[in-house]
Picture 1 (tube, rainbow, N blue to C red):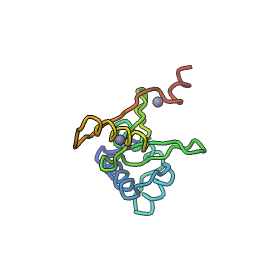
Picture 2 (picture 1 turned 180 degrees about the vertical axis):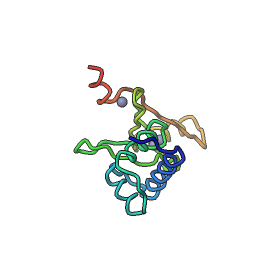
Picture 3 (picture 1 turned 90 degrees about the vertical axis):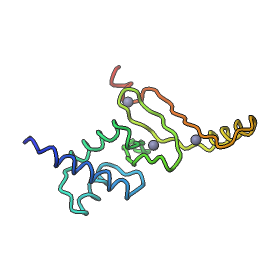
Picture 4 (picture 1 turned 60 degrees about the vertical axis):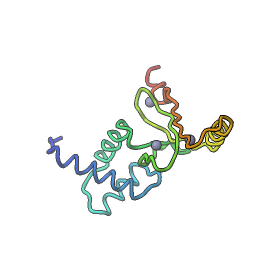
Length: 135
Ligand SMILES: [Zn+2]
Ligand SMILES: [Zn+2]
Ligand SMILES: [Zn+2]
């Protein structure tokens, strides 16, 4: 493969971020690729994969596996409160939404008469892929 100017790669990464932000749903790399294509981007599927990989490692993008074990990606947005299950090997983070955690946090705050209580919950471990890679 020919070396590409760095600026171009960065531009494609920015496009990826923009497309993911606009979609605001979990997309597969292929879905994202066709979104980018229809908005005029020339990024190939492998570039999209690389951009996603980079963004996942940087913690900007959450990834989940659907029933067919296909990875789906979405921008991690702090505005929408949620938690992460993060792999310490590949840094993939899975988004966790659990009303029970929220209820528990509220209950604890009430019990101790705290107001304006915020919380962060992050579970860290090894994902299935990393586990099977080492065995
Ligand atoms: Zn997130
Ligand atoms: Zn992993
Ligand atoms: Zn929470």
